[in-house]
Image (cartoon, rainbow, N blue to C red; front, side, top):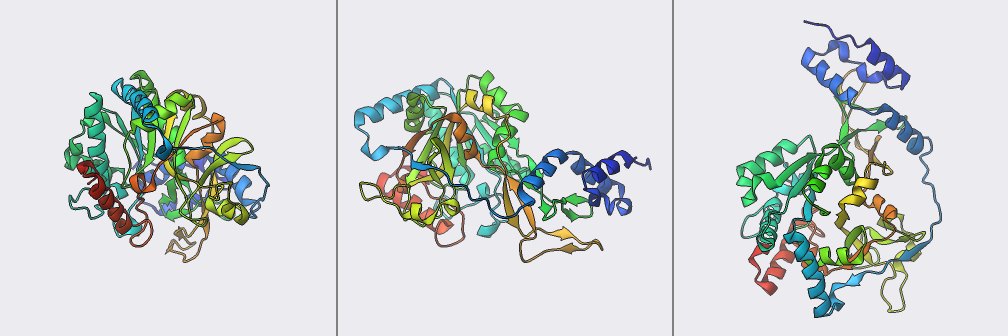
Length: 423
């Protein structure tokens, strides 16, 4: 058996203070040694060092007073029929010319829902028995048929579970969507660290890795060549959305047309908050630039503040439906978005090589958020839509934002419209 010379790598790890990654290397069989080395060689140690310094040297949250103002959103309910038709015509023309692609962020697992496969494979209990993937595929097919052109569908997957989603698509014949229109992209992964910035081993031969957040989509699009492919094929915009919205309106021509007509680089759909304490991010202006602020980062007085119409001053709830201009992402997508730390309970290997599963947070994961690119655009085209028509998130097993509530919302809209594409 040929022996691998790991001395240079060991020296590199010691330089970065990460020598613990080779603690069990000598006792591993060759295949596991190779797997560990492959994982190590993918790590950007300069980035980990920088993030640890930035986020862990002082774990106290920095409180910086920012000037925050509401952002104007066009309410679809207040649109005249003439204006609605105008925007829809612009959007339908863009679709017919192949200028818009769909981009799904589908990395989430259905574990919290009692479903051990990727969330997109979940059947929420509709009469049709369709999975979330199939619901989206059928709606995309309807858009393509109307446009007279197949809309390209880019799907970003967690590399750990990507094979399950890909197999699901193949097993179901891509749900009738032409297979050459479906493009799978692998999300980048980031190592977890302990409070001292030491990278955590999940097993003797495995580094603890997790997806780098939905904001990592831009790097994934660029690195894999998908953004260049879009541009080469004449795609000028892509519709970004998350996998867990059972009421997702695929490639809405009104939204596309409104964004194009606005001249903005980014379009955002929002819904009005149900109440001041609803745990949803808010689209607003921070120091004059568009930004989404998480519920937990909003001072209490701002959450309850009212405007002249006696409605919440900050009410534009972010529902992760955006339209991005390809040229804009090509220009700014290569720049590093800020990372956010998340304090989590992370399984690790102790000094004796035993796997420990802590009950309380013991380490940190770093992730990027897609909306952190908003300030670089200068402005956004915000469109306020009706929650009951477009936003039924599936995040919990029961209760609020659950399979049960989402199914009920879908069925209610179906009863009102009779639109079979919903179910």
